[in-house]
Length: 391
Image 1 (cartoon, rainbow, N blue to C red):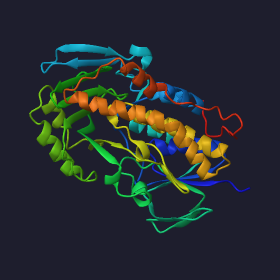
Image 2: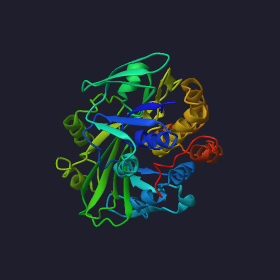
Image 3: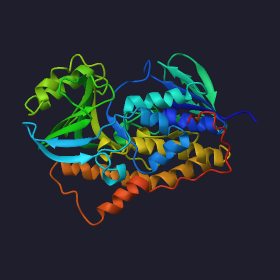
Image 4: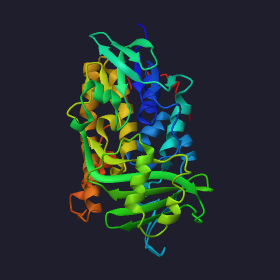
C-alpha cells in the first residue's frame, strides 16, 4: 500500500506538531504556510499538565527546555514599580501563573520545525486556493498554481483559518470575541529585567514586561477591553494606531514601551477570541489547534490544546487504518471535553478582568480538567517509526 499523503496548512505550532506524529505513523506529509518563513517572537506559551507528557513522547523535552524563557516568576507591580504580589515558576507543581516550561511561541515553532524539516516537505509563501474532495481523496489547487492530490487535508492555520472558511463557512459563524485585545512585541531590555516578569494592571487594561532568552531584549505585552474590534488582522499600521489610542495614558512603563513600537521586528496584535464549532471535520478535511478550538490566550492552554490535539489526531487516524470517518470521530470524542474545560477557563478569565469573581468550590475541579482532563492512548498497536523524534 502506498503511504497516506497528508497536507497540513499552517506552520506555527499545531501544524509542525501534527507533521511530527503523522510522519512517525508512516504518512507522507506536506506543510504549506502562507508566510515566507517561520514567524519569530510572539507571546510566551506554556506546557502544563498532560502537555508535558506529549512533549516527552515526542522526544523533544530537552530541546524545549533548552529554549525556555527561564522566567523565575512574576511580580505584580504598582505604577511606581512597588511589588504588590509575587508568583514563582515552581508554584503549583510548575502549573501555576508562570509555568515551569514557558517558551516564546516563535521559539517553540522553531523547535518543532527543526525536528521535522528533514522528513516533512515544507512549502513557504503559498497556501490552498481551492480544494475539491471525493470519496478517495482531495484535489488541491495552490495559490502559486500547483495542483496536487492528497488523501487527507488538515487546517492548522490559526484563529483566522482560511481553510475553515473555505470548508465550513464564514468566520463569524465560529469566532467568539471575548471583549479584549492583546498586543505583543519585543523591545530593548533597558529596564534591568532579569528573569522576573513584571505585570501592571488598571481596570480593563494592563501592561506586562517579560524576560526572554536574549537578555538584551524583553517582550512587552498590552491588553485592553474592546467590544467593537473590527481592524483587519493584517493591517499592522492600523493595529499600532489602535494600541496607542487605547494605552497612551496607561501608567507605569507604558511611554517607554510605546517608544519602541515603530522599530520592533515582531509586532503582533489581535482580538482575544475563541472558536466554537459543532464538528472539526468534513469528509477528508479536518481542523486542529486554534483553527478548530481556540481557547484564547486567557486560558493559558492554547499550545497545550494544539500539541495534545496533534498527538490524538495522528494516533486515531493511524489506529483507524487512515479511515477519516472513524479517525476524525474518535479524535473529536477524546478532545472535546478537554477543549470545553479550557474554553471555560478562558471565558472566566475574561470576566475576571472586567471585575467578575473567579472563585468557587468547583474551580479546582475545572482547573484539573483543563490541565489533565484528556486520555492519552499509548497506541501500542499503531506503527511508530520514531524517525522524527529526537532526544
